[in-house]
Image (cartoon, rainbow over all chains, first blue to last red; front, side, top):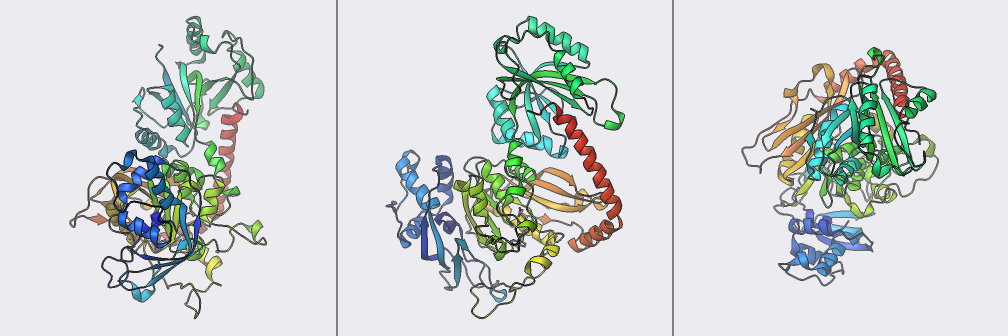
Length: 125
Length: 466
Ligand SMILES: C[S@@+](CC[C@H](N)C(=O)[O-])C[C@H]1O[C@@H](n2cnc3c(N)ncnc32)[C@H](O)[C@@H]1O
């Protein structure tokens, strides 16, 4: 699971959960891979992201990459920053670990890089 | 500067998808098309495009097109075509290409030719002042001659009713169909979508560089591969844990005895050199809301479960696997309740009304029993405009339709959504009863059709063998 995906997922499908975001990450294995930088993609992605959640997630698993706490305004022209963002979004991957619901502590396992968000029959709201 | 027209020359298949494919690609690439002839079912479009570069960009994505030709002559008879071409040669149309190596390809649509007849046709252009060498393998310039004998091989006239000659300016994206062939793909499932239709979906979805693309019923990920090939960054979800972990039973007989390793959607993305565009796949039930509220996709592509092929798939692939929760088992397989087609579609549309960008496209297939097909059964939602409804005939009685929706407004509480496709169980019943009754005749028909198609393509390809 890439940190980009983490930024998009919630546990609000759980019974009784209101927001379910962001999910806490427990990373057992983290893999750093290479993915070709594509400025257009990063620029399209940034407005879709929750910036703080991204920065925190990266720090949680030890790959903070010196991202600024607040996203600077003219990020479009800062190629170095865009590349850093790209790295955190697409190149840092949790292979084995857990996603944890912030409200109920329900654990969603990540194995072989694939998060499992299936619920038990009795958890569906 | 001379004024030129282009002929887009098509393969004779998936005809209902042609126009929307070309229009969608042009719209995605912001290329204005001027129609010089209203688009029809004939295997060409006659258009004016802003530049040769635009033609090349458009062609390279199309999987219904064969190639694009800069039109030098377009006449109702072959003698007239030669007359026009002679005059144009006198006016110097060949000048820039005169000393280059070249070849002439000949296509006869709805007719056949022997090798000799083909050579004869090529020779008939010998008045053209070529100075370069003929090079069949790797020519600098390719010229295309086309004779059109109508659409029905049974009533083909003696002489062609239209003839074209021109310079080939671009080949189409059809090489991708072979590149992505399921036969050589690392990981496939029982319901893997064939490459051409997957590519068509990505084109109709206007997938563009850097787009965020979702397939909520991802299976073996065929749609993701196609979307990634056109620059989409892809995410998929599927309820089937074993599928996403590449642990369903092998679907290829010949590999049954070989231990399968690294079978996954990611492995396919690596195989096709587009792993840079692979974001993730997630085991999840698309009926439940697990995306964060603000998530916005640029395109949603889906091949939802119809309950036609899937149950047959289950018998083989899941009976021996742990469906019930076992103590100590790390994975829980929740029991599943029936999820009817209309419900799936309504959920998908409601979900997309929320999570698709404005003007973004949602595409999915629905099964239809051809006799019962009524447009009013098709899904509708007040946030979406239906802009494409293309039929792919499967058998005499059955078909599936690819619906293409564009999001036209932000959702509100008052939005309405309906879908009344005759229920999948009825459909399945009919599908199988009619299927059985007609199995023999259908098989025969299929064989005949396949043979016709073969002859047909042999004809078309004849001149194109490189
Ligand atoms: C027709 S197949 C898709 C095949 C895919 N296009 C491919 O190329 O392999 C439908 C898929 O939907 C999945 N599915 C069925 N119900 C689902 C649900 N409620 N949520 C998510 N996926 C589901 C099935 O496991 C199956 O893989």
